[in-house]
Every structure is written in structure tokens, then in C-alpha cells.
View 1 (cartoon, rainbow, N blue to C red):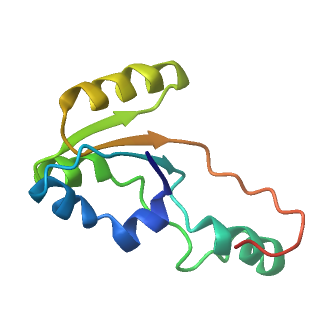
View 2 (view 1 turned 180 degrees about the vertical axis):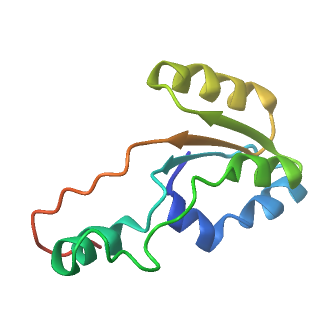
View 3 (view 1 turned 90 degrees about the horizontal axis):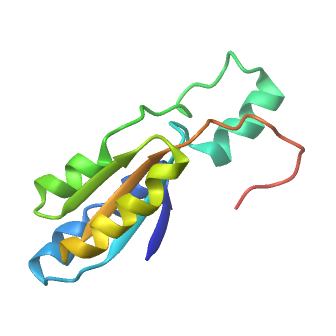
Length: 114
């Protein structure tokens, strides 16, 4: 299982094309909060929450991207729907992505995110 943020999926999500071509039944799970959180939280805390240029993302349907590549995609908005989505992903026998919409956490206590 691979666990992603939505921003990090943008950096390597096309590897699902490779997984489909080689028939690798991997399962990815995205915590999709519609932001580059590592940058958004400190930027908002320092420059103000109305100055989040280039740190906000859409709640993109990355599950549809994986489906278009030939894999299995699931979109989840409720916590109780995560387990059934994972079960369907595993049962598909295909490379699969479960795209989970989560809240956008803007709490920032200082420090560095890595």
C-alpha cells in the first residue's frame, strides 16, 4: 500500500501507468485536502490566510486518472466508506487508488514540515 498526499500524487501518480502495464495490483490511498500542506500552513501563518498563492489545489479526482490508465479508482468522502473502498480496490486485482477527501488543516504550531 502507498499512502500519498494530493500534492505528492501529482509528482509520481503517473507510475500507475507502469503498474497497469505490468499488472501490479498495488493500492494507493490519497489523503486529499486540496493543498500543498507543507507550504500552505507556514505561509498562511506567516503571511496571512488570505495569501496562499500557489499552495491551494483543487479536490482533484485522481481516482479518475487511475481509471483512465486502466486501473481501479475509488472516491471517498465519509470515513465509514474507506474500508469498503479498500476492499473493492483489493478485489479488483488491478492497480487501484482510493482518493479520500479530508479536511484542510490550517493549524500551524511552528517548525518545519518535511
